[in-house]
Length: 154
Image 1 (cartoon, rainbow, N blue to C red):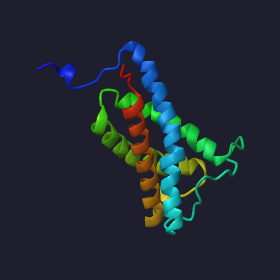
Image 2: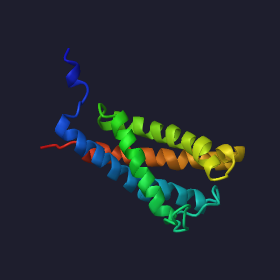
Image 3: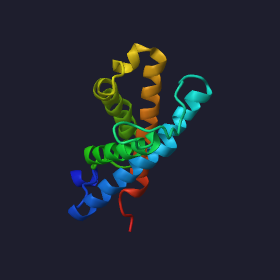
């Protein structure tokens, strides 16, 4: 059985497109899925954080939403590189799990201490759950964008 029939391997010319779509999918997934999930959590009082915040971030004062979108794009490139051989539902599911775990763990154990915040949302169950939900939603959205637009279908 030909293993190339089971997995997509981007050709060298397609790799740039794949990674570029990964960045765009990751950034758009922040705006639509990550912040959308945060909006739902906020409406149901499961998160005190309001979505679509334009509060300035340190050290450069970039509005929080645009900072999140940029970093969502960077994570989208990492996701695209990690799952370049997947397609369709497998890609979307792997992306959801990627979002659930990797960005959440980095936010809890690397970003939080750099910002002077407690590790893992201070162990507060709702805070921890919110991080998992919004990042899983981001992963789903980024994976969906890659699945729909990452490969040329011509």
